[in-house]
Amino acid sequence: MEKTNKPLNFLVKIILGGIAVLIAEYFLSGIHIDNFMTGFILAAVIILINITIKPLLVILTLPITVVTLGLFLLVINALMIMLADQIIPGFQVDGFWWAVLFAIVLSIINSLFGNNLNPSD
Image (cartoon, rainbow, N blue to C red; front, top):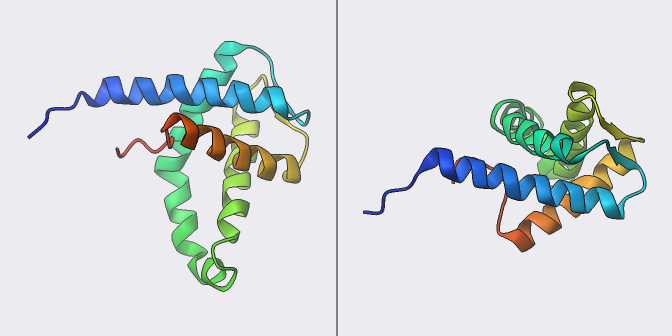
């Protein structure tokens, strides 16, 4: 049985997530992050939103997610990004479609890093 250090894993996820957020912001003109620290705070807030609010929304919207073959999850991810936009000063999304594109690009970058911004791992 392997021992894991959960707080250290959580910190690594935040650091990798912050780097991924900053890379995604560099490529997307509709996403604005004031400084590096805001990017890392954004990664931490996205992780917290993914722990608390997102599972409830996924369960409540399960029928429409099934009908759309899972594409509605993109809408849920975009709404979580827009919620983070409202919470974090220094982070701005220019609209819903920019949030969808940001969520897609962020997912691609995180998968390349091996980081999924899901703290249950």
